[in-house]
Length: 294
Image 1 (spheres, rainbow, N blue to C red):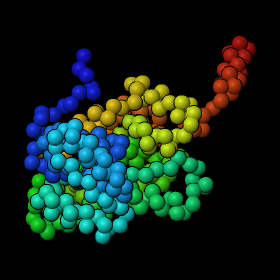
Image 2 (image 1 turned 60 degrees about the horizontal axis):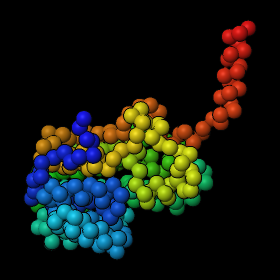
Image 3 (image 1 turned 90 degrees about the horizontal axis):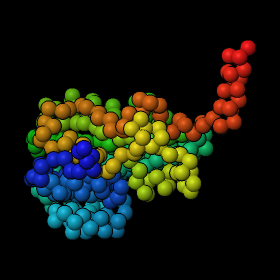
Image 4 (image 1 turned 45 degrees about the vertical axis):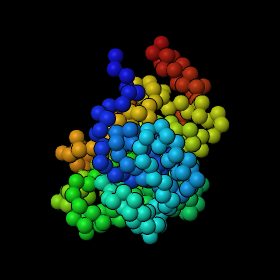
């Protein structure tokens, strides 16, 4: 049987490509960055925490022998994004691929969120992706640079919405619309625009923050996935590498779901927090049996 944790593309698949990964210091951003480096790309990683970026860049360079550039940037601020872009262009000469991966999330009943908390998620996810897309898009169009690619990380509940993660669902739906809109509008400039909608790919930091303590045990996401497992980071990295590589040159405006069939089974990743207690199921079953017997 083929091992889905193996690396998919040939070793030089991204040779000569310069990539920017927002939120590249940890989690899925780090996993994708590592694979891009292994495939021969130069990668700049950005986030607000410079120390974390520097440690990640050093670690990945040692592991892969590639070139990883840490650049501090808060994607919520357009001038910081422009500065980050110019820094990377100065260092690498050009940028070929933008991967909008920076994200934030709260699991919370919406009425408990302050307007500020809601704004924070919208600003990181939607405004941040817009800022990076505009800054790099304008640069490529002004300089008449072709064969560029934008890859956005969305989520399966961008289509359906999901209770308890309303700011994230709202923002990701906006990113999804932007992906499809620009795929058409900017194709004439040689810019492709695609997205990935991952299901559960647990990363230590994000999931520990989202589901503290024993909540993580109670809320076993693999049970919601028809394939009965969560995703491996390499599986997502394989898909991302394909979508930013020249092998996907005819893929434009596409959103690829990688979730083991989860959202089809029950749209809205967090709706199951309305879980019915066992006793109630027992009562329902008893009532149905009593009816059948009568």
